[in-house]
Image (cartoon, rainbow, N blue to C red):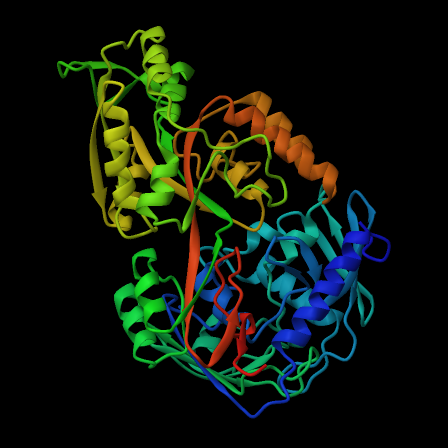
Length: 530
């Protein structure tokens, strides 16, 4: 794809220019933004771990070659354009007159250093970004503002992969260690709109404005992120004016914030939460007939999976449990994002049809089952299991909901102790979740990392492979949607909802744009008076 000739690229560039003008240019007096965040920054190394806690907060200091807008479309960042020269070669044109916070110029050598640091220096468990570079064979620089990347195989989504990688300044003869960055031996040094000031691990991160930022002077002179993990405590801090902005506001607190004169912004997250079945074992723990006698794994029968799917009242979950701050789901990402299918929409529960399907599967009397999930990990997680218990009881399936702290739940899920469980997935594109949750587990191809139920569908695997081999654009989106339609017709999971990300803000903030990737940044906040 060439951004020089692609009309969507022109739109991306235009949107990017508007965002820069709106979010960074500020002729007003200096202002401080105080943010209560649930994100506990675990490191000052921007390439240590691929977690929102790190990528969200460190995006103030460091930048990427490619960005994603609120619809997850790619747009120029430190690279102003890119072009695919062949199936295995890309060229990226870099932005001119960009400087790191220490004044050194940004060049192709910094891109090479950053990619090689991930590929050659950082190792698991600190190598969480290696999945984004696994297709790269070599990186070269024909001149200071051009990077050529050779890939091992066809890699049509390389620009999207690079949208997750921060660029660091190069060193002449070694790689900077994580210990150096965390211990203060080397101050964080990026090209971003804000400079590092101080960090108290687990407590707060302070930033100051980069007056020389290439995108124009940022809106806030100082930014302070305060780690407040308790949702109630974040709401209290916002209500009392102790902070100007708070993320991950519970839906139940929205109305009380509004009555206090505070504002709320929300948007569907680029993710879904769903029920997942164990499709691997012949018999499952806790799955019995109504008399308590063990039975064969019922979830291997598509009729049973379909029955449970159409007996689940997803609108109830979104409207009553999430109080409208959620969207009933029929696929892995909210409808309208690239690669989703407009044909897949939630339908009201059909209990009569569900009972008929169970009877056709030889389970007219229903069965007993444990459905497990975490508590407090995601909006509505534990409450959703209670509602589903009532839904499935109407077709003769007796559910015992079991909830546990996420660490306990995740350990038992991995050990195969649950027959059905509540799961979730988010990512930079729908193809990431399709490959992780529904593609057949394959260590060599690195698929199925979240496919704990060991679902296998060769036809879907082939359709997904085909879609992933197409360049980013309408043709790829259509192929991804077709693959989604194919797999969802087999009911390997029961999509529940796409919860909404909710942020609250006070009078010092004029507006806040919630990003689908769940980032919390000062760049999304416009000061009052702008």
